[in-house]
Length: 256
Image 1 (cartoon, rainbow, N blue to C red):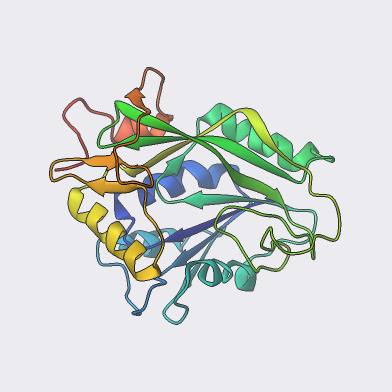
Image 2 (cartoon, rainbow, N blue to C red; image 1 turned 135 degrees about the vertical axis):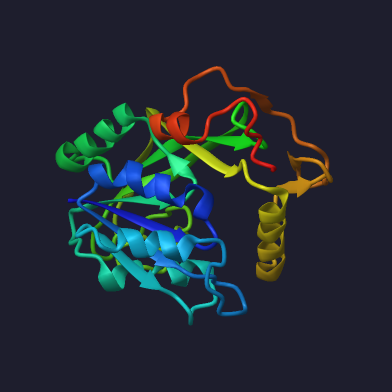
């Protein structure tokens, strides 16, 4: 079984496309909606209406969070409604992340055939301000095999049944590798500056550092000293199909 876990708050710009592109490849998709900071706030940008539409799909399960105020325990709500069992695979999704169809086929192959590896990290391309410039952001763990008490250090998932913080004692060896070909296309920063400012405010509430800033006209990656970080380069490849169909336009900068 291949399950998807998606947490979202005010992610309407890409949410419908994300679900539409991922769902055909998944056996189930568990979505947790809600803000995990100090106040219980529902999405205000149309996210709820999108989820109400998709709740009619048999493979979609939606959990509304209004009580948990931390990011990682919020994601743990997945375990309350998933139908997975030890030995199944889970892919961690963000509402602004996409894959090429050929990469989905490889992800499904892994879920059905892989016996040795317990987790995969995928190369992460982060698009900045528009669809023509991106930053290679290293490898992020995204695909994991679910096993009871298997403590796997997976980005954004901690203290969960089967997935535990990586600094905990591990009962057995953890076999996790970087996949050489699969790429996650991340569009979190092809957004209006108003939405970016919300992200900044969220990080301040969480008292976590944030490696991005609004310079007044655009979004910039920064280093620990607040200096602009090098690495944003023109993108010369092809976006996943649904991004090409719904978003990719020479005049769509994302900051309208």
